[in-house]
Length: 246
Image (tube, rainbow, N blue to C red; front, side, top):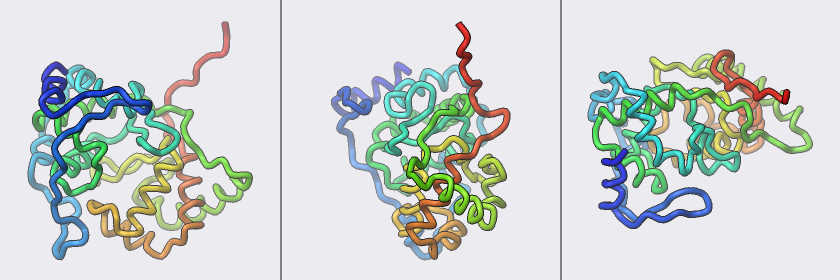
């Protein structure tokens, strides 16, 4: 953690804001993504591959995660308003890929980039990912709150089971080996924002197979499927409900 904080100090001025920690740093690089001819969604190259080969040390990862907790919270719960995703319980493969993509400029995330870049090497990527994966998934997270919630969840369930279940699983467990993310426990507003960006071509490291599936989706369809996805729970991975007994 000391090395990470030193890197932050060298990158810019650290300040505490209402939503977490922010600092000025170098602009993110910009690599060719899905818009480029010959784009390969999960190319096996660079530091991502190096990190995937390493065994993550959860204790070291916990220290490295401290700076991440300012936005994603110490529990990894993220924020219900969708500004920062829920990370707890996410597959190490997904975490490593997304952080490596952000660091390489393949995924545009100017807020996350200054934090992702302070992870010093592939080993630290593996460490922090192992720690995050070990966290239980919070049961209390942002869900669709409209008056028609039951209807939207029902419509979303039909869409999900038709086109999403094969990759993301019955309970939103994803597929670690295939780099498909856990979506159980994820915030509704974050899910809606990401799927909208993927559909509209703004998520440059998107999986072309997913783009193909949701490209025809209307805004109403994305609302419904996000409402359903945010209702999913993974047995054995969710945090234990706190006892109300005194």
